[in-house]
Length: 220
Image (spheres, rainbow, N blue to C red):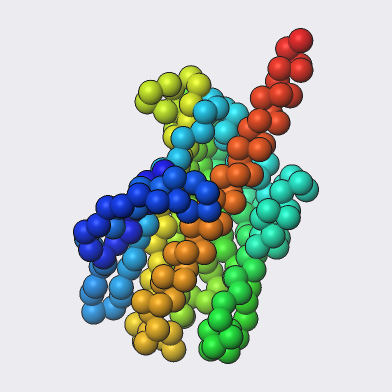
């Protein structure tokens, strides 16, 4: 797995939650008059076909067995579901409520430890591509977080493996009460996202193995 972080030049290997990681910290915290953005990218290979991995993505929040692992996900509601007849593309929008606890001083400033997000998903079965974009709609006067995930057939084994590319951007509003602690909060957010990403992949792998066993049973 490769993790890109914005700020300076650095490359080192290590382990995050038991998973080998090459951490590449590259240039480019985006500083303007209005904002500072910190962006992170990760890649992960699922040794399962695209159809199975995307099916697992739909089941990730719904499977009761995963609620303990994904305990930070409090509620998921489907807002819209549309199939475009001309292209065959599927568009879905979901509302997600997340438990996002932080240090006591942060909770005192923000006033809550829950965050409401909107997830937009596009699935193109013809080109075998699934794209998800999630952003927070609450706490926006303090922080803006956007996560993009894309599932595509892996170039080394298009019919057997799937590559997942994940990008996360974090922006502390410069005039908010959190501005003076921006760097520390961004770091804490990044660590939390890394941790939750690992848990999410564990769930995806578990569901993929279940679907694989299920398909083998049906083919017998």
